[in-house]
Image (cartoon, rainbow, N blue to C red; front, side, top):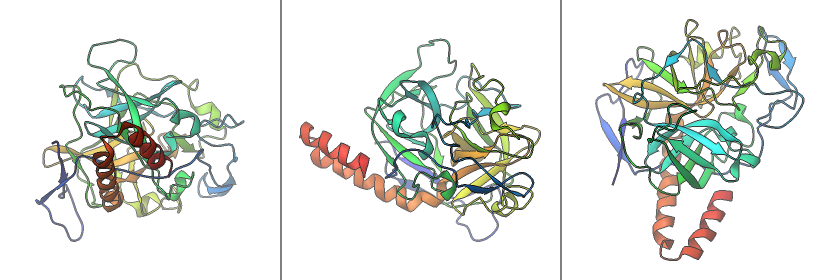
Length: 346
């Protein structure tokens, strides 16, 4: 049975730590709940710290008058074929629309806002993908059997619970292009001296807030859909939440369950919604964050991620419940389908 190693050390940590120790977790994680669309509150702090109205129609895939810009990596570079084997693409009837991280061979972690009502139907993932336009033989398309959205998400990514788990119908087949992330952050640490990266193709549906450089949200997307052909990577610097929440940047919008990253020279626009923020610790990459939201002016504001460590105990408990449920009813296919549907919609 595959087990995920949890790294409990860091590149630079201020405060108490158990550096050097390792823990293990059962081979999956979870999240629960979730309903339909993500909604931005009427009043947000944007544009140089001044309060401005953000239209109610600023939602994921809401079809309203104000469109949510695509996500993409600016100033990044082509990744090598096997650099990020845990990178996942979420697929619906509309094509690839979000990113994710393979944490075990049958479990993917992504953003809650990626799972609005229309995208839940016929949901699948692709692993082993590199070039979006060419079949290379390493790609694997796997249906999603069940998914859970964090119960506190409440259709509002600004609450700080923009995280979800996908349970796959079958295990992905291991290859040099398909491997789970080596570790998951167990404690909230300061990765200020780590090499951290975001990855993705620039998938649509990134939830962004307008900045001073973007009077018109729709105008900053370079055609609203110029995605990278090959998987992109960009180095990015994790910053403190206090800095991220300063008047210069997000002025109080960032929650304790978030983590921020920023790099002016790289000008990263978060990669894919739901995609990974990873940092290299003790010579292995660990999952630190899940891409949630940011600014349409990529160079001006930090990107905000769900802080994986803040969901540790809850995710551990939920996955155990899920695994126990599957084992308990695996001999009765009818009951299995009924229980899965109930579990999925809680």
